Length: 232
Image (cartoon, rainbow, N blue to C red):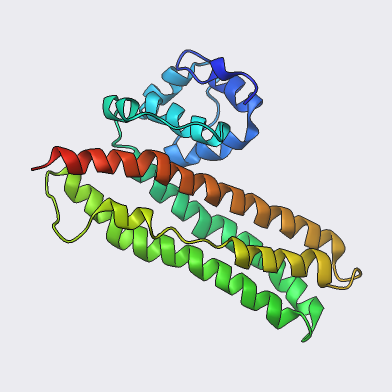
């Protein structure tokens, strides 16, 4: 983020996105469409029924590796849009990013033959399954319903958000093995252009998943801890 003063409600959304293109991918997850002209972040969010303060918190996490919202920040803003945002992110990964990568990867696997193809498929399947296990089971089935119950004033005696903190899956080793095959070990004449493109796609997905985890660590978990402590 080159201009920190763009992370305010009065700043123009178009200028914020021009300053950090990565933030474009957040718009559909908040249900914000394009064509917002020169409207401010606050105006665009209001027109789309989004808390501009929550939107700015999420943007700040994506834009600044050192940013940590305070408990005071999280307590004063409307957090009702946080779970829908996270669920929309899950759908983006599962419905768009993984199918796009798989379409290109299959062509590379077929071109590799038996020496590297099965190995590449194995590492990719492990990578995808770990992400899906975390998203589809742990978050969608366990964590999100628990948070929804807390928001309704219901506290469970059998679960605590600290368990979620300790169950974040580390898939970087699997990803590194897969990237080594794509970039270092396949013969140079096997679809080099497509290998570069899919490597960039995988790196971008990995970076976005990392930001997703940071939002959970620095926004979701502290928010839920506050919910837990507020109930008897």
